[in-house]
Amino acid sequence: MSSAQPIVGIIMGSKSDLPVMQDAIDVLNHLKVPFEVSVVSAHRTPKRMFDYAEGAANRGIQVIIAGAGGAAHLPGMVASITHLPVIGVPVKSSNSIDGWDSILSILQMPNGIPVATVALNAAKNAGILAAQIVATAQPEVSNRLIAYKAELKEKVEETAVEVEN
Ligand code: RP5
Image (cartoon, rainbow, N blue to C red; front, side, top):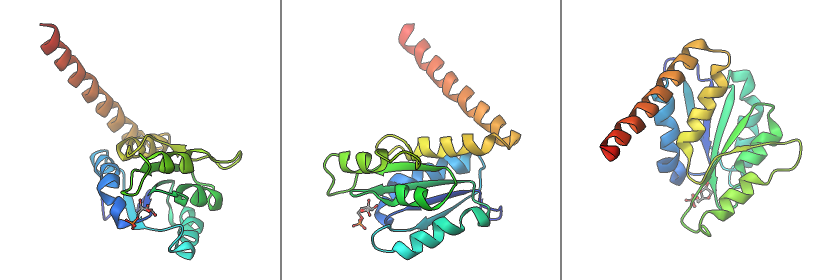
């Protein structure tokens, strides 16, 4: 997807989040939605985070997926700076208290500043949700999502046959 103008921004608080965030990358590649990937830390690089969030819309980004773990302030802070929709991925980091730290710090946003929070480590769903948002204005992405859902349905039906027969 490198040649096309990115319309989804994938950011994460640390390179250590990449193994989880790779699922968002993979599903956006599958759905042929152009994206960019950056490491942006709310705590270690606050100015980089501010500049990223402030400039994203002007660079053509339509949705931001932000993954972070622990005191996971990145998605919420980015949502406070940009008017773009932000999807938060709580990452279960190594010092985590079973991931609840990440989940609650992304989920419990104040009124007015929503973050669409997916399940723990659910970067794949974040990618699908981002594609669904951009698909509202892009029929070709809609068609790929329809095909993707049909594949999911077929897989379940195949396994149902295996179990039931
Ligand atoms: C968060 O702290 C990152 O998002 C990551 O999940 C966690 C640990 O980061 P590292 O210490 O591995 O860089 O900011």
